[in-house]
Image (cartoon, rainbow, N blue to C red):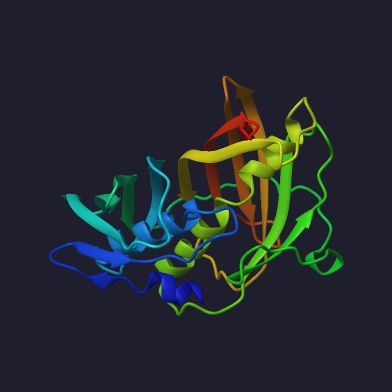
Length: 261
């Protein structure tokens, strides 16, 4: 399956779209997939000249890979410069995602970049370690208790020329790195086998257009860990250092309970 297949949502009534997803190694659905499909559903109700500039999503329930996902789009506002949409993703158990998305008509304006891309090994010097057939990932080894996760990503199959489809690809991959940053900062030196973790909420601000088939560095750092929750802030860069997106995510992180005999 390619990302284009996941984004090929079927219409199911006014402003309603249906999609599916594969089964993932950890069971259930992958949050980045649901966000990417929700963004695609919202974009179907917006003129193409309006580009996504931000989205905010809450993960409500675990998704079921064996069941279709129904994306219901609410046209909150159609303005001259901004279009606002709300998307609720549902399955038979109820809502699994609640997302708001805002699209802006392109306009000229001053530009300044204050965040700088950190030093990182070139992707060709790192081993491929992707868990998904949709993208190539080259993870940068993290230092214990650093609270940082870094990886290079690129889409393995082209998704077309629509800018929103490349934004969907970024959304898909952006849900992958926050957990690595939390694991890197955990004082108990845990691994993914020691904790049960899931995304709670996810926000993306898109600063510049991108081509998802090109390499991009995803750099995430933990800003808080406590109460079973971890907050991460990430920046996504082109190889030349251009800052193209900012991502914030809060995760639920709990010790795994021992199974009863």
